[in-house]
Amino acid sequence: MRRFFRLPVLLSVVGLCLLLGLGAAAQEFRLFERGWFNVKTWWQPAPEGIALQRYRATVQAQPIEGLEDDVSALTYDPERKTLFTVTNARSELIELSLDGRILRRVALVGFGDPEAVEYVGPDRFVITDERQQRLILVHLDAHTTTLDAANAEQLTLGIGLNGNKGFEGLAYDSLGKRLFVAKERDPMVIYEVRGFPSQNPEQPYAVHVVQDRERDSRLFVRDLSSLQFDERSGHLLALSDESRLVLELSVEGKPLSTLSLRKGYNGLKRTVPQAEGLAMDAAGTIYLVSEPNLFYVFEPQAD
Image (cartoon, rainbow, N blue to C red; front, side, top):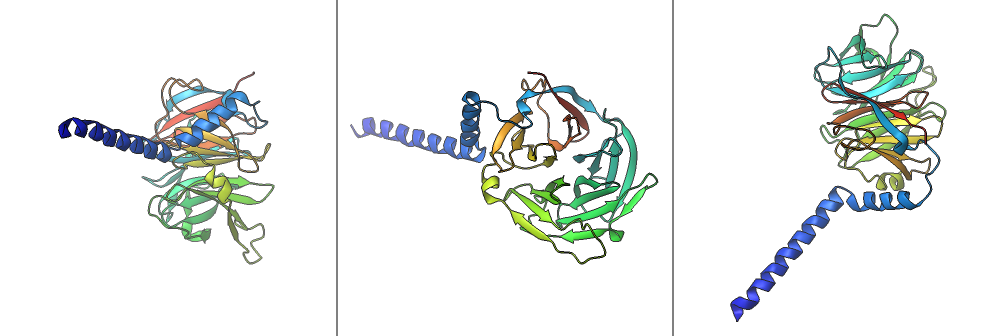
């Protein structure tokens, strides 16, 4: 009789362990929050904003010819109407056309581990050093071939230093003069930096760093790879490589819409591998780069 009762008990213990394991995995991948968001967006009217669900891939997995190093981050330059990315294997700032062709390469000296680049004004860009959590302001003109961090304005934050899980993404709000800085994970945070870059280099810095904990707690993704601020709506886009997702956040920090980077969604024939950079132009077209050198374009479709 004892052996008879041992089997159900053993099965119950195994079943409980499996349930606990599945629950832990679901929490790790934020499946509960993502599932509830999908349910809400299914029965509620689509909110005003970027509406990522309307986007479809028009360029997919196009290799960036002449580039073998790992691309990291992406930003749109409205003056030149081109894109910029950085590589960290061999540190370079690379200008791309809107169809993914290399236009020029600028060597980066003393930038450590460059992971993100963001346009902040005519001929002005901020580049991050992930490991040291440095924000480096550089000036780029038509004749620039090399940028040396030693000659640039810099701000080191040093918040929650964690090796290569540091600053992965940047976005700039030109009207609010806010620089959004994404910490990849452990913990996953979006900081808002005010006062850098300085609007008047002749005056002393007055830098303020704030964090919206409520907004960050709503991010149902596993990591942050890149950010994009949409001037038209005031909304923020957050790219997650591990979750294969682009998430739209409202002014209040609430998730509004998503663009899946998995096969079969948003017109994708294959899942995007290791998405690293995100940018949007004035027309709302989304550009994306994936390591080591793949280029994507997503465009909104008529309802």
